[in-house]
Length: 336
Image 1: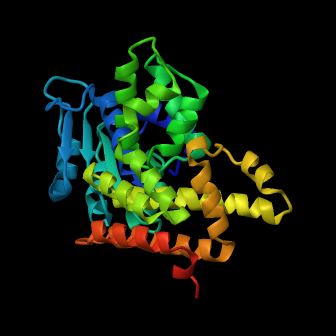
Image 2 (image 1 turned 90 degrees about the vertical axis):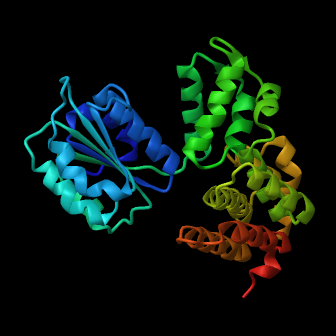
Image 3 (image 1 turned 120 degrees about the vertical axis):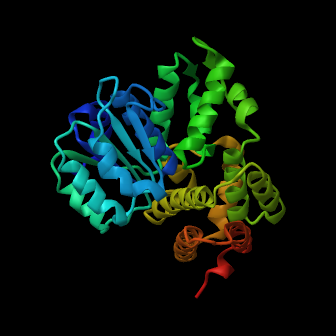
């Protein structure tokens, strides 16, 4: 059954009522986080060999076998299957036909919308099919607030705004940075803007934002420097694509409001979250450089870059450097 994104949290909290959950989408970090939570909820932990079985891509032939196995110490079992694609459909359906309460947790990053596995399980009433996509803007800020609240840490509004504007799209990277901040603040602590910037100012996620902002503004030296720092910190090219698309979407919104007759200042005030003050200059330069037509073509180029990076054996680091160079050249690189 396809689960609406608004009901995802509630469904995951009640995952014990389901036979299986299929987690798909572009955010591999969020998929892994949700899968881990499901396994813990049913199996008690993620490393109990009696109640949890973890199957990687080369072990999918054992799905039915593991689903039918009994726990030697009692309790419900969870079978955690990673890198699932259509080839696993037969094993999954065989497992679901068994008279067992074992929970199947299926990780399927990048699974196509028309994939047989996805369409089949969306029609299965005992299977929860949940999309996991990168959060942006208000949704990301809300998730961050929740993570800090759960850890009994408070964060100032300007610090939260800055944090949500620089963090990348991958949930795994976001959680790493949040855990770092929680450790820094301590239980019951409070985080201000200076605290947050001191803790993550040099992270790959922050340099991603620097690289994309500088590139769109035409600052080749700053863009290249920030990109190389991000590469050294383990940049995900997919995260680079998401950072570019996020900035381009925000630029497009401001351009649209200006086309409707609003002044530049009025349009910027309407943007949520607002442009962080340290990025105001580069954002303004980008507005002056780009127009709606070339911005749309640049978005298409970034989407093509993301697709290319998902191909096996893709020279993704070289493609990342080329993309930043193209954006630095500006609209003339994307005119027909």
